[in-house]
Image (tube, rainbow, N blue to C red; front, side, top):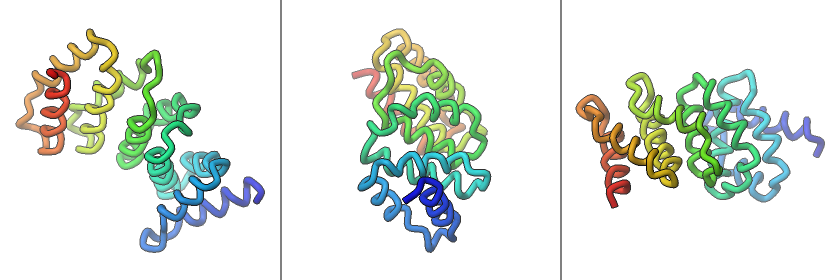
Length: 178
């Protein structure tokens, strides 16, 4: 099938009402035909936020099964995250980055993003928790950075955070202190 036809097919599928949308079917097709990943990935830039968000959702599910497929896209995904305004999309982009093996050297932009957003009250619980987990993953290989992350988390006044964020902080501090 021609690229534009496939992109149009995916766009129409992603624009359907949620009850009719079968992300799992779409993900299964992409997993069986890896060459279609570029088509669904292209739709994460779609003007319709619902199409864009659902394309990221499909990519996130594919990244759980085939994280290596996203290694060539890492820089682009990070740049998209840095400018993303849609909460659900931010969470999904972070999740994709979390699933993909960390780059060496560590992305300074991604680490700064995580440090800036992990305790930001305007962020959703999902974005905060994933930012904490991602920051830990990025800092693991650098003892000085890990110490800095530990200090930030230990000094966070957790009474202002949700149970999910408190639990994530506690779990990451346990991992750091092992």
